[in-house]
Image (cartoon, rainbow, N blue to C red; front, top):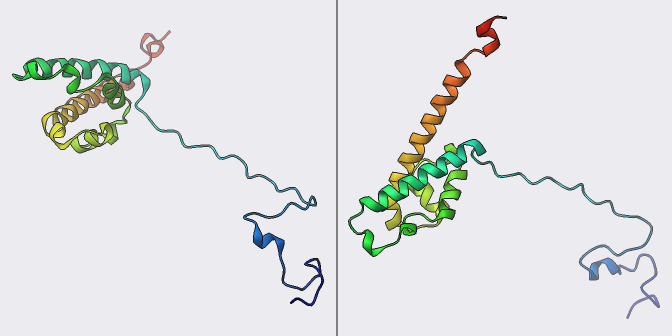
Length: 150
């Protein structure tokens, strides 16, 4: 039995807040909401390179399919689907280091990785190195106005 007739007396150890998950609303203070945080965006390959890499991957898929002696037993999309090609084309160059990286991104089996992973990585790395060489050449060129010297 308590010494007081109701829980409204100060010092009796009763707290209504202990019965609820959050603080009780008293009307005296308005809680301030935390400012919204911006989500970090995924970083992708530059858009100019994506389309070119997508075309290169489609060519690689077609070439790999027609080189396979067992092509009558599987479809072209068993190598890479169109959505897989888009996913690879979006990957930043520094993400593609091994066939395991590609297999994990595409959620493919170890068998698929052994058959196609190294070819995809090699093709993407060759594409990246050719893009890097093109960028270096274009950045070394002087602007046309300087060449003409008006």
